Length: 166
Ligand code: SF4
Image 1 (cartoon, helix red, strand yellow):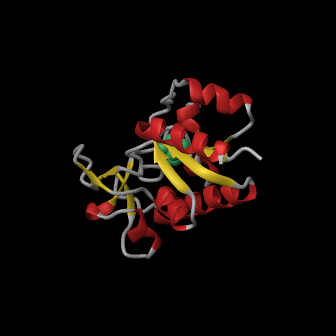
Image 2 (image 1 turned 60 degrees about the vertical axis):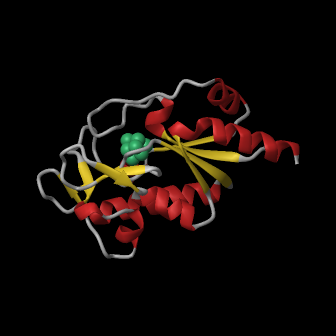
Image 3 (image 1 turned 90 degrees about the vertical axis):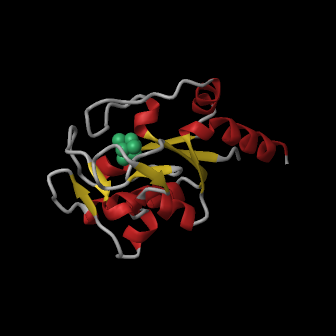
């Protein structure tokens, strides 16, 4: 069976981001994988009941997703509201779907406090960012799902092709 890929809904053109926008990733592999039925789309934050639009949120105090999952860090909205619980639920929803659909890979948009895998913002809402992953990306990776950011689409293409040929 072809390997399945969990994918961020905003990358698939769904207007689900906090600012009501999407961020479609245009790549021939996306069209091919869609036609092959490999893509499993989710917006983790919306799956946890967050509205669109919603206030921007960041992982506080320069922490990363694994810190949030371990209870060592919070996710806060720009207005100071603690939304940690919702972000953890979002990650759990994404993991459940990935496991139900037997996804081996995840293709997630970078920079998000949920979906980021290469970098996240530092909690100061100043645009400052640092290396690390969001809450969903951390939970998926911790459960054996290979996570790629949108900037790593070529690496994912190569990985999927290698697996198909093995
Ligand atoms: Fe996109 Fe993920 Fe944020 Fe949803 S949670 S809007 S899929 S980056």
